[in-house]
Image (cartoon, rainbow, N blue to C red; front, side, top):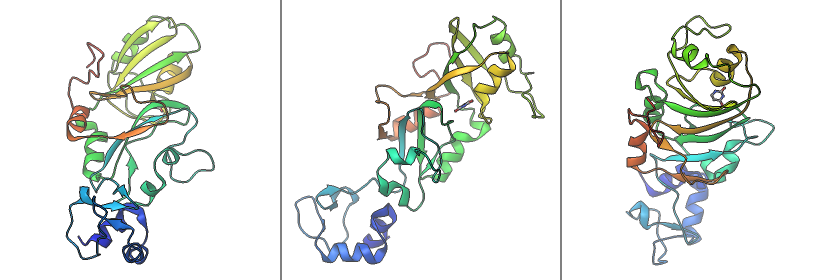
Length: 243
Ligand code: URA
C-alpha cells in the first residue's frame, strides 16, 4: 500500500491532507530526513512531526477502563475512546472494543482493528474465560456457587440456560466469577437471579491476560505473546485453579 494511503488510514488525515504533510516536510525518517510520498520506507522508520508513526494495521491494545466511561463511539457522556489518542477513532480499518463493559464496570477492555481476532475472542467456541470481581450489596447466601455451576440457571427473558460458571467466594460480599459466555449485563443479572445486587464490578482478566500493573484510564499495545495468552485455555491469569 502506498505511503500516503497507509498514513491516511492511520487517522492522520485525508490523503490530500497527508500529501500536504509530505510537502510541508513534516514526515521524515528517524534521522530527520524529509520523506517523499513515493518513498519505500519501513513503518518503524517513519516519523510525523518527529514522533513515531502510530502502530500499523493489526493493532491490539488493552485499556484499564475506569467506571463512568461508555463502550460506544457516540454517546453524550465519557467514551472509552476518549482515553485513547483521538486519531485512533479515525483509523481504517476501525478500532473496535472486543465486546463491551457496562458504564459502571471497570477493568480490562481489549481493542483491535483485526476483525478476525475480534471474532476469535468473542466466539463462544473459543470459550475465552472472562474473570470478574464483584462487590455485592448483601452477604452471599452460600448456594450461589452451586447455582452458577449448575448449567441450568435461566436469566429473565432468555430462552437458554447459562453455561456452568465458576464462583470463588472471597469475602461475605466479595466474589470472583469466571465466565465463558458474554451475555448482556450477565454478571449483574446472575447475582440478581441469586437475590443479590452488584454494587461494583471489575474485570480482572480476559483468558490468561490480566490487567497487571496498568493504571486506571491508561492503555498499552499488546504483543503477539500477550494476544496468544488471551486464548490460553487455562484462563488462569494469575488466579490458581480457574478454568
Ligand atoms: N457483566 C455485567 O453485568 N456487566 C459487565 O460490564 C460485564 C459483564
